[in-house]
Image 1 (cartoon, each protein chain N blue to C red):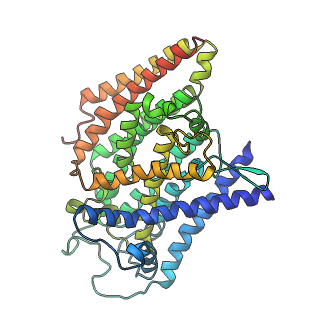
Image 2 (spheres, each protein chain N blue to C red):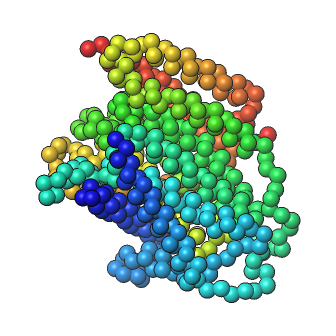
Image 3 (cartoon, one colour):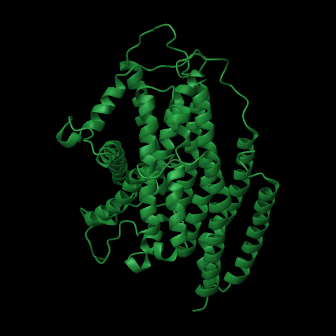
Length: 337
Length: 124
């Protein structure tokens, strides 16, 4: 019973934290773009516009929901939930901190630590493509259909690179459990970024393609496809697509920090209290989240054929070679002692 | 061991409740107004021409098939990646790595074949 209560509490707290970060990201997106373009951005709701995401959410709820004629109604209504849910579910295996002792009870700070954490995360993130392509197809609009198709082709192409780069890290730590991967890099010198620089670069770029973000946002590029797969969506359904996208960005940023930057471990302070560890993870993930916005206002969008060429002809062979090289190093140096 | 998955189930229930509740809320609270032409799909202000159930470029299918191929390959690599360190300590690292190298080389040859045949050219 007590274990159940603890599990529910952890689930609720971590879920609320993730959704809050996702909401703040929608504000940060507008604030940072305003800052980069020399204007103010939202600043009316609350101090510095900090309550803007809340106001937006309320407004979305009261908006009219349009279903276009000829749309597949059931699919059209369910698709946003299908897109948002897997993106949020991936958070379940991310260790957000070390261990807390509350009332003599040791509580590890993650929803759960399963020994196939990486596999669970990849399978969940693989599911999110269904929401996008179903939403695009069910809308009965040409822009939506093309956007959904492009998104699915892009997401599955880059998923291969994502898997292969994560496998290189798994090789080094010898476990699919994300907490074990964190435990293997407690000191700055043990961070995987030093041993897997190529995998780190590939993973970071692949994050942008997996979340349909600039410079790979072909699923929704305004000049060609109006809005892409969410052209016909309004009200909370539209919001769910974006909540899912921001949650996916948040989780992938946390994952990048976990795999390559030691997750919640604090540099040069091994005995740091648990809240410093959580802050450390947030700071590392915050860097990647900021990178999403920075790149958006810095780089121009690629062309779709360039994107596919990059994925299949550059990233996939590079990731395969990197994996083989890492495997050789592990196989032939580790057995020596 | 299996009870470690209980939080995943709880979380799935929370997430599903959140998603469905937000969909239902906007269904209940959102207003409805009918107007001529409002229900048509958006086509930049023109009257929509024909149906959107179009025939698709064959490239998308090709990408999907290639994805399945390499995704299945990656599934086979998971156990090896997780066990590689342990195998090396047991002294079996070299032989297992050789097997994996052969496996990956065969698939690499497959990629090279698709590449050569133009299966990766998008703008043809």
